[in-house]
Image 1 (cartoon, one colour):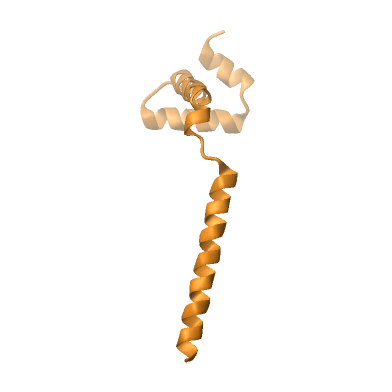
Image 2: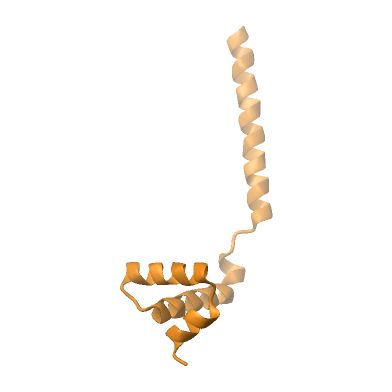
Length: 82
């Protein structure tokens, strides 16, 4: 069974439609697009430790900035009252 046939047979219609749409946009066959997706996934898994963003650290940074912004807004509001 060819890879295009496997994609048709084993993939949900929603996922298949996305693969076909991406392939058409890039001028590829669906099997070629699927191959690129798999390669990208595998490459990202290999470099996962060095390239991923720690979401907890990101949340802490954003939360800290939000607190600083709120404090500055309060200072501005208190200065405006004077």
